[in-house]
Image 1 (cartoon, rainbow, N blue to C red):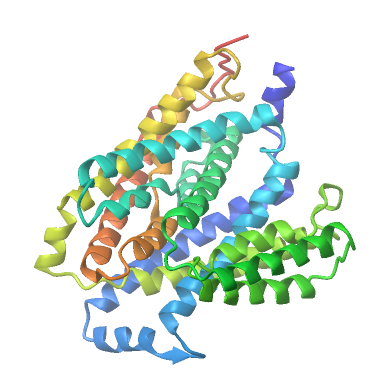
Image 2: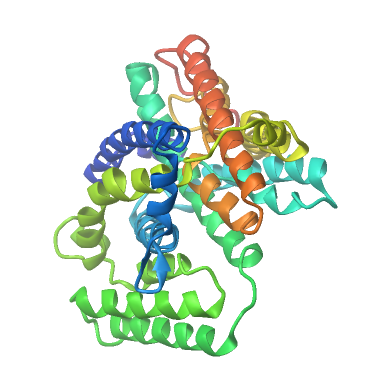
Length: 399
């Protein structure tokens, strides 16, 4: 049984390999657009940049269309990937799913507690959710730079716990960053979701169009309900038919995931970065970066993530029920935790939700996220480059 468990970590599917490839591309585009947004916002074109995102289209500003509309597509893709992992991927087996799931919990709880402890009772307390996230694209980008020094099983482990991290972020957004609920609109959105599930499970409708139309309607209803509309993307993902037997061929879920990978990696997420990293630097903002909120974000991502991932994983293995995947050593787990500190996309997204009426705090939070994510990525690269063994052996710590 243990041999089968170990060997399964080496069996990377074509879907996973495409995901890694798209993650590398997305990481490069993210970096370029993030720097570009910051540069333009502090250049002679700053006013034009700000006015552009304030333009309205169909009743919403372009910034809202980016953060609420396009990011719903991002979360739709996250949902489709999570569905695949749960049904036929690394999370489909309880034994394989348990370790990255426990690592994800540790990697979310410890950073949140660090921020909360430093900001409890203050106006920046809502930022506790900011350092909980992990940016898969950047984490994969760093591992790509390391080449063969990163075993395939580490890539699978990082992606698995990062996907669980995204699920945790979705739950946090739903529970803590929704306000002023309108019950009628929320009930209507739930009814639309129920109809889509019935169309899938009872009538086996395989065409994508009804689900996409229903998903758009659900998004609008959630927008009016007070619940963050990006949750419609995740809900829609689990309503779309999925078949493990038809991977990359006829399954609507696989077809849509295949179609969305490149647009999300190369357009949606980089555009979100360009729109949200355009922070005007100034003495007041830089002072806010050094505040308890900025310190909570920095310590949460750079120190809290690896501490949470490593301690939770060690505790799970110490019970004797779980073992490290084949080829992994504890140096790899610490490195995975360090790369988990690259929060970026979802962290910035949560920062917008945490401080909607405090642009200075939101802007300082974004700068803290950028600095902390860069620090975590650099330390993670150096750690894995010089500390982790190139050809690690299997290290089961229990029988």
